[in-house]
Image 1 (cartoon, rainbow, N blue to C red):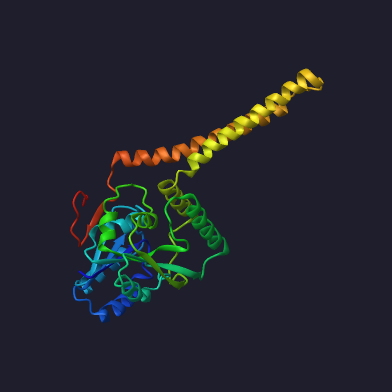
Image 2 (cartoon, rainbow, N blue to C red):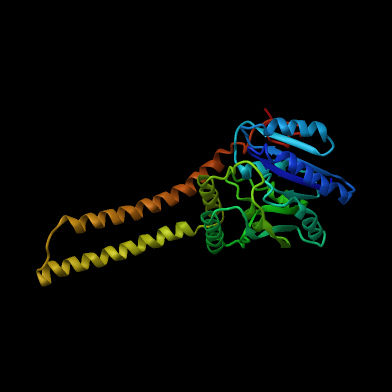
Length: 318
């Protein structure tokens, strides 16, 4: 197989047909000797996405593969399931909302053939998104880049093409809280990019709520940075130093100037301030421990309820 296209699906009934049409119109003329496959991963959709996928698999049995999860496991897990099954020497990751144009795939593939192992799509502009979302996304990528020891490209999503080497390396990463764009950067090899203008969503409603984006941001930070732990330690030393200065000032006021006025205000401020810093530190440590616990339990990343692809080793198929 020359090319696999992995497509996570969550409530995308309005876009599946058009996406398949555009992908077929692009990939068929490329005349790939080994052929291509389209791997749709239904991530617990609640609309008619699954029936559409089953119908597509019947109409285009030569190219359409699909998996359907037992429930919603998340975007990154859905992509991981597709990568677990992909047989192509090159694999494209693309969302189904048509914001990332399938027409960029031939350019990505041509760039990969020049000797690169990863070619990611970098956004020049983002149409149809609120100012708040654009600003938070821009801020997140730059904070993450500043905090991590891995060079994670800014203004990029999961839309990219990767070689078989990278796919096999990703399969060796067992962590539960996936952050694929960071993992791919961590793997290394020769990487480059193509720029494009991101379009508006073609149809339906995005499944990426602000709460999901926040969890995704936490996964990225905790997976590739220990800066929050260091910040908690530094803040502890800072507060301790500040408390020591306050103690010296209090002793000076009490025994030298004799202007010391006992009161509950300063006591309450000190207690609340110190308590807040302690709770923040405990929360940061808790986030890391929670992710450590998830990996120790070694539960499967996902459960497949049905599909027309064989299960890889050690993957349950209900």
